[in-house]
Amino acid sequence: MPISSVRTRKFLCCLPARLGAFILALVAMIGGSFVAGVGIIQLAGVSQAPVEKSDLIALYIQTIMYAILGIVGAFGFVGALIRNYRMVSNFAIVLAVHLGFSIASGIFSIYAMFTRDASTAVAQCLVNASVQGVEVTQTDCQNGITVMKGVMVAVYVITWLIQLYAYFIVERYADQLEEEDLAKQARVVPRSLPEISAPLNQMSAYSGYNNSAYPFAEGHSAFGSQGRRDQGHMV
Image (tube, rainbow, N blue to C red):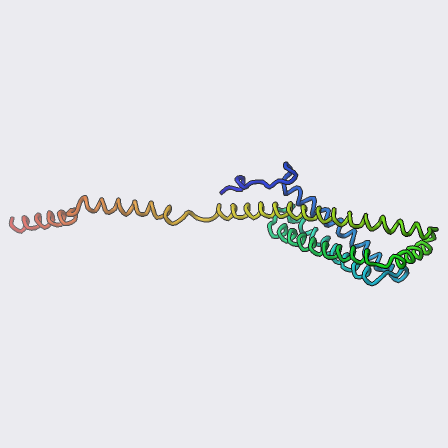
């Protein structure tokens, strides 16, 4: 089967899946590295602005996850560029695993945020504002925390949906590359044995026909030679 006969996978109805995998890998490489860098900076500033243990654990998990995403995104970018099935397939697997961890860590962060004592959160807000030299009131902190809760939930849900669709795009392109590899292997495989043996059988049948057409050819020659020798002796 020629490679040209392999169906090109699409996303968003008309765009090729290869373009989607290429862009997603680029975004994962740059975005993952950026988020991981921000996480490292935040972890370095924990000593100056202490946070709760649950938030610190979530920050560690998030930093590690996005660092891995940035590294694997680089491999996916190269794989989409050179049409390598293994690289793109591994990138799809990491996207699925990253989505699972993202959902787990997001639920943990949302749970920690909504179960946190409101007075403690307001006090922490006032402390952070004083450290940064910003004048805020207790009501401002309460309103800001309420808004941030809603924004945080919306951002997590939208991010999960985007990651899920991104996984489907990369997985589609991985399936296309797998079919292309199978098509390449089919081109170099020799013809099947029945196709090769057919001409040999025809040659064997033709040889048998020739032998059966003149069954006494050699014997007749021999007999003729023997007859001539006998005639010579008689003369």
